[in-house]
Image 1 (cartoon, one colour):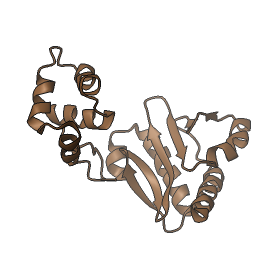
Image 2 (tube, rainbow, N blue to C red):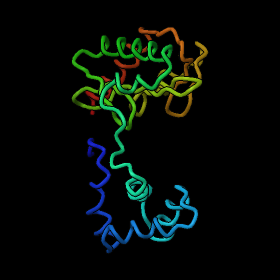
Image 3 (cartoon, rainbow, N blue to C red):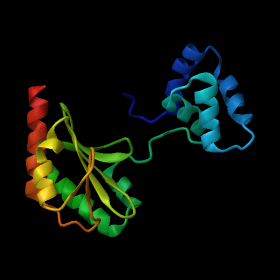
Image 4 (cartoon, rainbow, N blue to C red):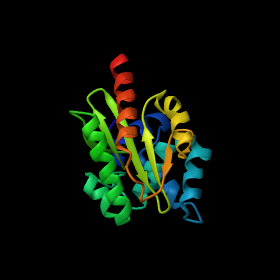
Length: 187
């Protein structure tokens, strides 16, 4: 997976698959009367069979965004987050890094993640009203769902919702991280 966020990395595949130079696709976007993002995406997806990733790369490039990467560091991510949530996120990552010796915080999909050499362990996403904790792995969330629900957490399909001012449960995060590390070791 390319991690630099450069939208132009898609150009060779687009030109090969769809048989036209990039200027042709830029012109197709320019011809959309409404000029709206959704209409431009639809033109490429429905009219020419583009994937969402390729359509988004073309549309966003034409709109002036040469990179999909918004942040390089946890600090950069936290600059745009409510100060209370930022403190909570720092606490979450402190707990996870304690539980995962040798792990690092990286930015992937424009979200901070804990990663070890074998793969992703845990991620966090902050919105205006809540924080979502993302334990990676095929079984970690299911394994902990009864404990989480008993403790009153909001358990979604792949995430756990917590308030922005959540009191970080380092023991819970450590247990979930250990379960993910065991999954990675077994792969």
